[in-house]
Image (cartoon, rainbow, N blue to C red):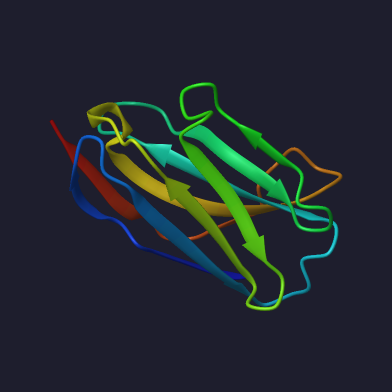
Length: 118
């Protein structure tokens, strides 16, 4: 499985940014696609995930109402729309994939940096 994340950048507080993750290498039926982030000096944390089959979503409380995760089955992409960004959203963002029956993410993409200035 290959995961290619893109879309990061430097923005100001209150701005929006859209991350995209291009997935390839297998059929993602019965898989869950997730976004995680890691800020300097902090542990990696869950941001959001979406089931490939039905598009069911989950969000971390810190991003609920501001971020939206979506997937495009035809393009094999998973996007993270980030609105009303805050300086505390600054982090390296990673996309990852796991099987629906597992809680462990088996495949990870390289990160894309998001920096939010105040």
